[in-house]
Image (cartoon, rainbow, N blue to C red; front, side):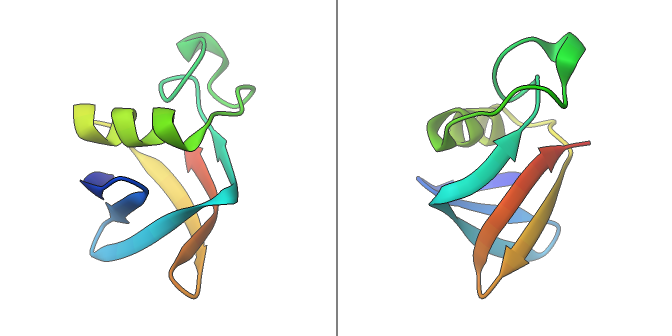
Length: 72
């Protein structure tokens, strides 16, 4: 995952926006890394994790907006 701008990220070659209702999950994004699937995170934490780099995620994107971003 690559940070492009606040609320705008890229996975692979596909850029997308993060909406208020985007479901974001992952312990390395926020919370405890030992419970990667259990944490629900705010978009600000996703931006910060993307800026820090080295985070692998799976994103479900429709019409350029992420519905779900999950740490892999």
